[in-house]
Amino acid sequence: MTLSKQQLANAHVLVVGDAMLDRYWHGAVDRISPEAPVPVVRITREEERIGGAANVAYNVASLGARASFLGVVGDDEASHKLEQLLLGTGIATHLKRDPGLKTTVKLRVIGRQQQLLRMDFENEPDHEALALQNESFAALVPAHQAVLFSDYGKGGLAHVGTMIAAARAAGKAVLIDPKGSDYSRYAGASVITPNRAELQQVVGAWRSEAELHEKAQNLRQSLRLDAVLVTRSEDGMTLFDAQGHSHVQAQAREVFDVTGAGDTVIATLAALVAAGLPLRDAMPLANKAGGIVVGKFGTATVSYEELFT
Image (cartoon, rainbow, N blue to C red; front, side, top):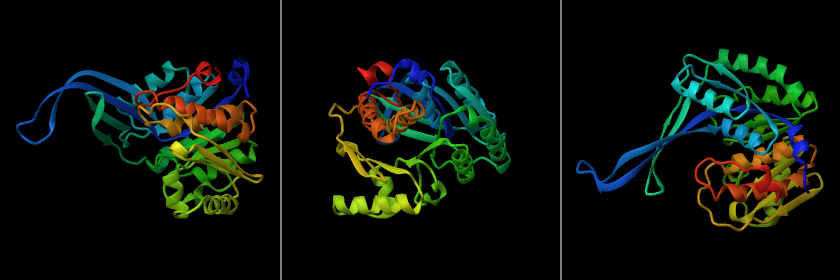
């Protein structure tokens, strides 16, 4: 199914979650260190990209929909750089600053076209900053057709249950990229999108398709969800809803980098649902978007033209 550019341009998605700055240090590897058996990387280029939940908003905007991003960050160099990058993409940016918070930075060292090391800088936001986020959320919800919660487990969604209830009471579609082993905090959402490993953490392993279907439907019903969408890597993705299930095969292509593929899938789903597509019609397109993005390096996005041609 095709949507016009105008239909997508009229779709407004509010993304809420853990903002991050992705830093890449690219360099040449010519020797092993005499101090330890590790490569010496001579840095030749530095790159900064929008990461975490902010990358989900970037994916929404790249498709041509209208994206707003709400998140808690520190009052540090990384947060100002992230804000600058977000504003440069046309995302309506609502950052709540917590002076005691270290904005999450993922620093990746790249040599010979592969990741050699990743360093994470992070801590958790305080309750005052989260309360400010809740106030902004209430004010922002009415202008959007869909709300997307991107949970990276960094503490930015401590009040997600309250926000889900408010969005659903306002008649909005609520999509969640979940984290952790307790999904009760996501009760009442429209759809959650765990990958295979994440779902197993919550419902346990399954030995057959029939058992997976039973576990997914039990989870959906117990949490009062409209749907559960399980992304299954090379096995495609399966949507479980009140009508039963719907499956799409993975798009066969060379996999270069799976970083951020889940971000692209849920962002595409949210943009299409906000534009008026039912979940079952949006799923094959979200699957296609995920297939496109794994062929790109790092956290990447998909354009309208790539998705609909």
